Image (cartoon, rainbow, N blue to C red):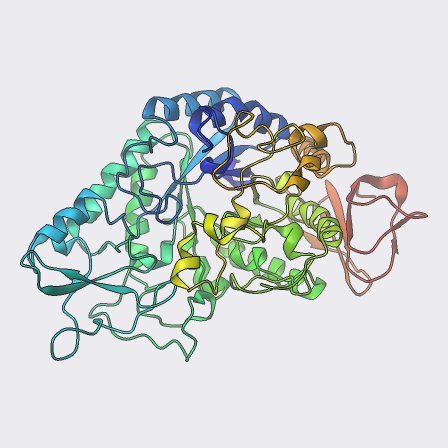
Length: 542
C-alpha cells in the first residue's frame, strides 16, 4: 500500500518547534535534534511549514526565494541533514509550497514594480488599471483574507499614482498569474528542485486561490465581506475550474519520480463534491480535511462529516485524511472547552471562556476517534501534549497580519504558534537555552505540559498519543479495513474497522456499557464497566 494512504503526519511549524542556535527562534538544527522524539512518538512523517527566505509578513507564507532556506532556520545543508536523518529514522518529509503568491520582496515582484504597465515582468502578477475617473478605485470588489480590499495601488517610477496589484492575502503577498507561461515553467523547476533533494511530498497552500476567472469580474459575497470560502459558489477568485489544469501538470512531474511522491491540497471549498475534484487520479493525492477539522463536537455533526468524507473519497480511489488542528486554527483543548466547539471561521467562539479541563477531556476522545478512522491523519506540534491556545498574548507581541489589518477585531493565529515546551519548570522550557526569550512568550502553566513532565506521567496526553499510534501501527489488517457502523444508542459513535479494531465514542451525556475485557485503550478510565461521557475507547472486535 502506498505510504501516504495511512500515514500519520506531524506538522512542524519550524519557528516554534525547537531553537538549535539559541536566538529564540526555532530552526532546522533544532528540528534535527528533536527528530528522534518524533520517531519515538510513532508518527510516519513530518510536514514542515514554510522554511524559505521570507520577510515574515505572514509567518513565512510570503516567500522571497522558493529554492533556498530562510537564514533564521539555517541553510540548504541543514535541510539536507534533516532529510537524511528523517529518512534514516523511517520518517517521510513533506514541505509546504506557497504557489498562489510571492513576497513583495521576491525579485520577480521587485522587477515588476520597476517595469512599465503591460511589461512581461508585470504579466507574472495581476497588475490592473483602477476604476474611476483617475484610476483611484480598485479594479474590482475582491476582498482579502486578512480584511479590506484585495488590491493595493503602486507608485510608478515617475512618482505618479499607478496601477493596482492583486493580493488575496496580505499586501506583502502579491498573487501570481497562473495563466502566465513563465510562472508555470518556473514552478516546474521549483518542484523538481525539491523532489531532487529527496522531499517526499509537497503540501500546496491555498490551492483554490491559484486560478481566477478571465476578466476578473466582481464577486458576489452575499453581503458578508469575510473570507468564508466554505460558503462561496462560483466565486471568480476561489475554486475556479481552471486551477485543475495546474495540478494535472504537476502530477505528471511527480509521477516521474520513484518513491510515491505526494501532493497534499489545502483546499477550503464549498462541500465534499468540490473538494473531490482536487483528488481526481491525475491531480492531488490527498487533501487536508477541513470539514472534519472544523466540525462541532457533536455526534450528528461528526457522523455526517465522516460519512461525507468516505463517500467522496471512495469513487476516486483515494485515501481520506483526518485532522483536528493546524498552525491556522484554535487548539482543540481550548476550542472543545468553549460553548462553540465548531470553527468554521477564525472568529468562531472568540471571546468565549474555555473550560480547559473539559476541553482536554474532549481532545483526548477526539484524538482516539481521529486515529481510528480509515486513511491518514495529521497531528500539529503540541497537540500530543494537550497544549491550549494562548489567548492572552499582549497586543505588542502579536505578529499575525490578521490582527493589524482587522484593526484588532481578529486576534489572529499567534495563540496557536507559541513555542513548544520541552523541559524544565520555567520558560523557555527547553525550547531555547535558559535565559533566552522565545519569539512569543510561553505561559507559566506550561510547566506541567512539557515533554519531560508528560513523559513521566502514564495518564498524560503524550502517553495517550504514543499508545494510540503504537496500536494503530501494530494492529494487523487495520490499514486495509474499511469502516462499518454498529447500532448504538443516541449520541454514541460506534464503528468497526473490519476485524481489526472497534472504536466507541460517547457523547450521549451519560455512561454507556462496553466490554471491559476487550478494551485496548481508553481516553478516560471506565467507571463500573462503563465508558463515561466525552470519552472514547478502542476495543478488540468480538
